[in-house]
Length: 166
Image (tube, rainbow, N blue to C red; front, top):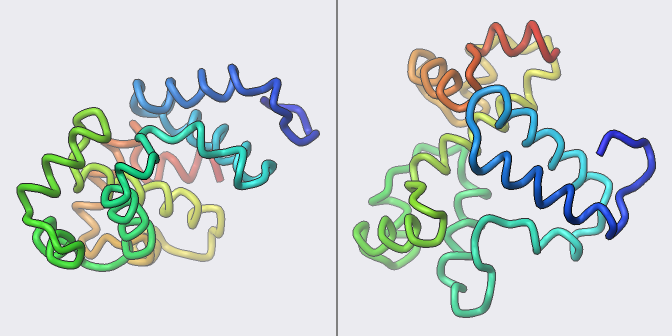
């Protein structure tokens, strides 16, 4: 997946393998797989990407798809399971249960924190931002919490990550 040309449909097995690595690994391997998939997304039309999601996007899961879209649109905001559930016209219990079932036991807040960490990784490419500032841009309102979650998701502290990747 490191070629300069655009991906073609023959790359599907490799992309699926990379996606599995993303889902089933942690630390640096998870970040590496994320960037491989991100590279694929940038090089491919939107309609070819649906098959690589880690949840069922069929019409029967329309409510779940709306939750995912909501999280992707609002991850920078201060969110709680209760506020998300209210905005989605669901009970917190219903949201938690549906989310864990659809994401193979990942919680809403885990998913939200991963979105925020991936955004922080993207923002780190601009070294004009301090880690404290970019953590706020990514949706974290507490630097200590950001550092802890970043380490948990990537296996590196934000400073270590920036030194290695940026």
